[in-house]
Length: 116
Length: 109
Figure 1 (tube, rainbow over the protein chains, first blue to last red):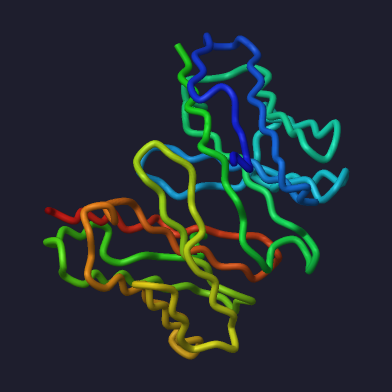
Figure 2 (figure 1 turned 180 degrees about the horizontal axis):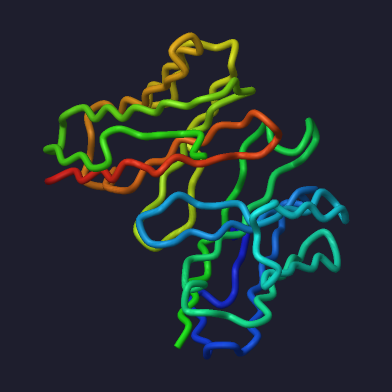
């Protein structure tokens, strides 16, 4: 039944140690998004892929990178995590038939990242 | 700058009561969406209302949109303890969603 899957659900890393979060989808959607959500705050869009086209938000730090090797999978790489990067990371998808987002987004359960 | 601002930030009611949450935004939009988030979980889409629509219903949910006032409201009728969650509005005006800060709803049994 799971449509957007995120692994792991909890990730602990050390300050400065690269970490990768993964997302997969069974919906065959064109668009995949990565959001960062800090405690009691709104989700903030980091970047999205429309098919293979990567779109970075202007204020997303260079420390954050993403890869989408195929339709189903998308990865978030944090090259040198800092204490301020501790957050919930949410992956979402949308069909993308009518532009990027004039439609519902489907979210995964999120990965909570802890930086020690 | 934040597109969606929600009011109230927190709401506590008894089971069976209605809950109303408001969202205001600053620029023109294509549509406005409401999402629900249980603690520590992902977001679940509730309802989408387009800029040319004024009201929409889905089960116990009623959403209104007033583009002249740049505001929307989400009404949950006959609330249940299981409705306890955070509720976010999100606006779409450039093909991307911008989320408000959310309203935390607690429904006491």
